[in-house]
Amino acid sequence: MTAPVASAQDSSNDPAPAFYQPPAQLPAGPGALVKTEAFPLAGAIPPIPGAEFVSDAAGPISTDAQRIMYRSTGAAGGPVAVTGTYLQPRAPWNGSGPRPLAVVTPGTQGQGDQCAPSKSMEVGLGIGTAPVSLAAGYSLIDAYSLLAEGFAVVVTDYEGLGTPGHHPYVNRVSQGRSALDAARAAVRLAGTDLALESPTVVSGYSQGGGAAAAAAEMHREYAPELNLVGVAAGAPPSDMLGTLERVDGGVLTGAVGYAINGILQVHPELRPAFDRQLNDEGRRMLEVTSTQCVGETAFAYGLRRTTEFTVHGNSLAEAARSEPEILRVLESYNLGRVAPTVPALVLIGRNDDVVPHDTAVDLVRNWCAQGTVVELRIAELPALAPGLVIDHALPMLSERETNARYLMERVHGVPASNSCGTV
Image 1 (cartoon, rainbow, N blue to C red):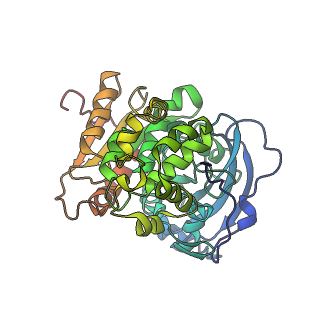
Image 2 (cartoon, rainbow, N blue to C red; image 1 turned 180 degrees about the vertical axis):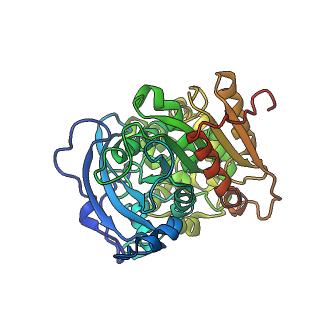
Image 3 (cartoon, rainbow, N blue to C red; image 1 turned 120 degrees about the vertical axis):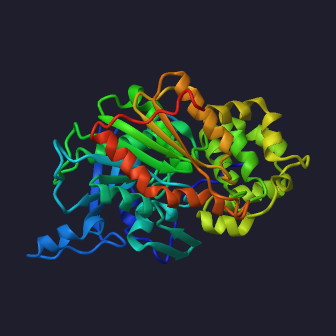
């Protein structure tokens, strides 16, 4: 079995395809800017010459946007080009010191290059024909909530989305580095009101919640110069096997293909182990999902059981447990072994049907035991449609403004609530 190799893909609605091709030589140092390009943000009003007061009064929709490409460190340890989006509010920052920066780490997008958030954030809804794809710019939800609080915002595309190479889905190290290097790149941009010492926060949900948590855990070692003051990790997949078991049979069953493709790209030595476990349908699932966005993956593989993809008819979670090398890699993606040095908010729905509630609680307990100040916020929403992702998505929508306010309170030095000792 060979791992599918990602490449730049054609699309009938693919903004700025040339921008996503990196130069042969990347600049030195993680977070170094490679190039930028202005574009109109979906939902934002264009600047009105001579009527700055109109733009100032328009709130978060009065925002200038630009794509950025920056250097990061890939899952395999070498330099990679990563793209993203920088959003600069037109209204002046009236707080003390430089404007604060929020890094948005997106939820699951898919594995095809056409799924990069910096593409869908321009058009809102990217519909492609080669390959057939549907990419929703839902990272705008988090971004606009943070812009409304006064943050400048940078949204990472993650390694391998848009740019050449495979996206190492839910890889803790890759996602954490992509987020921290996006912040490094943003504070170096010309023409902003940021500074190297700008208070910085990270916010994400689902895959993005895991990336935000990873950035918090890696900050002290990987990017200690960043003035990180808080993180908000919504529904973070902190236990990979637990999450794999929860999504099995639901709308997001096919997302396991993203994870396996990413593992094989970084750990080709695991191909024999996966060959022992995957049947022909499982190998086909890897090939199909390697170029898809999450919408078409849900359509192709939603509500199917991973037992359909294995030689022995066991689930992929059971198959992983039977292969020590695979299990070792999956466990390296887990969160909670390293303590963030800044206050953290962890949000989870009581009836989340993608990320098990108890795994988020365990993450909070692990961080608390290591001295982190953590607020656990449980969304007490009824189970409406288990397996259809609705119960996973609703807390993201219902809590988006309170998350943004929590992060701005960290900027202003308000003491953070602490759930440690009560969970």
